[in-house]
Length: 129
Image (cartoon, rainbow, N blue to C red):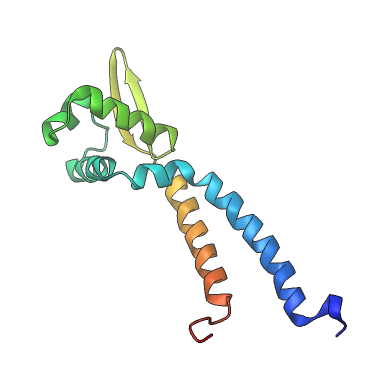
């Protein structure tokens, strides 16, 4: 192969496209990464999962399960909602928070991590320079 079409050059070109695609995927996953990267929100997720409620939980109900104030819970739920992890159902003046049954934000993150893993496994071994 000539210099412009070496095997190394071909790998670099494909790698550049793959890295650009992965960068877009990371950007699309920022919301869920922000949610999962916070220990308090992790605790809220677990508390909501442990409740077993199919109809959703109100902020007061979540507050009873955690040591957080209602304003703090509302703040974290808004972030979780913006990231697509939870939804809210309004019944009169009551808001019920529940997990998005499609789990699309989690699924998107899993696909992004799998993509990153494939790229990383395809990189040359640099442990011996």
